[in-house]
Image (cartoon, rainbow, N blue to C red; front, side, top):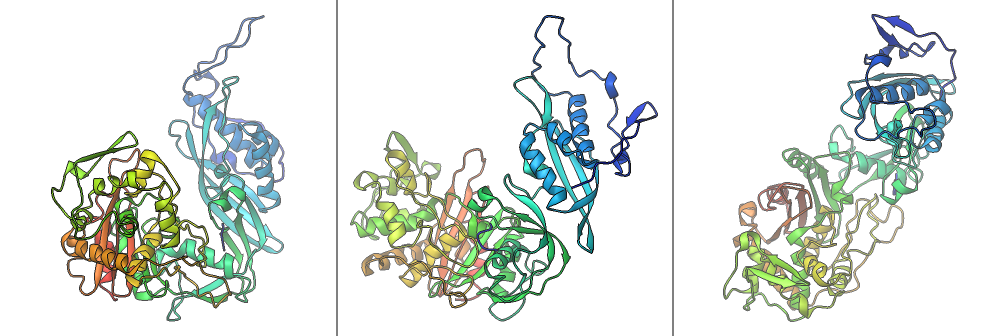
Length: 557
């Protein structure tokens, strides 16, 4: 789907006393399931009443269990019974809550709501939702789980539901809404390059991709829309490239057909590889054309392979090396410094385990991934040199890729001092994803940037991004030599063992604040295949992402 990015009030009844507990029963709405957690009014919530003439004491500190359950009860009871204003008043953003809860009935056409809470965990209360979605003569049951969090309002200490759109449905971001009706776009039948149908049952990672294809090509592919309950994204979600999402299909539409470049054997293998390693993602492209042959994610809810924005660590040294060689600051077989430490911009940089290479070549520094070999050249570079190299030669960071579904094109911002030095080794403000880094290896292999694409531009006449120049022949030759040497003898050698033929690779590890282990990266090519992968919180790239990438490269080239 492109760059995708209510209940009538019922009569009151008297509460019934059952076994010393109060169960609120809302006429016809089934809230008897909310047989409240117990305690009742006698439970100590720590509240105090101010004496006459004194200002009420503003309560602070952690919420009591009674405050949490009472607040949750007030909100859920009102929501279920259709008392939207009352439910909204139990939140800390009544205007936003009222708007979304009103739309729940009016726009989403959801009725007969039953809310059943689970066991609270601290300030958080999970609950299940059962309801009916009704549109004209079509009805279908709806069931899902959600949760709310209770927070204390600073101004008066009152416990209220911390309002987030996700309270209403976990797939909602703030600014989104739920709508039931004719689908905004018809469904699509997506095909692989051989004509086989692509489904999430067959390929678990493809949910976001299929959503993106529908939004982009649903109308022009000739399909007819069905009736569905869907999330319609607001501005903030669309700015994050989230697509509209179908939650429930009441009646099927007639799909149009769109063909992709995905290779069924490689896609199946990619799915199998990421399933072995938590938080892993991988992308494979054809170096000579930019066709995307496979993309998979261990966490299928978000397409990290295309839309991730992560520091790429030392895999960025491929781009940095091309810059240094081109400027005459490094040469594959010439001596190059690799000290234990190098200070730049008041930051002291070091190598993994503080190693150093004495009297070594630049090839040795690249193969062993020496950080100081690169940062030592920072004083000789302009702040925007790396940015220009990434944009002009590798086609990155210009926000102009048009692959057929939402994607992030990488970012190499202009930085100065220590942050510029960190950018040279893929830290600082540099951000990439597996598709970006697969494209980097593809550019090295082919000698020219070919924008990756999932759907041929012939389908819709869109223009693919291009790079403004290519590397000089001497630079390209040395860069291939560096990557080949690393695949044979450097940090990538273990993973690339058994990958025969014309091959090259680079490993990377990216430190992330708050993580005990770095993100492990690996980018490589073999023949006409180029691939890259990341394992978040995995550790060294050669040990984590490397085997995933190498396994796919062995399948062809």
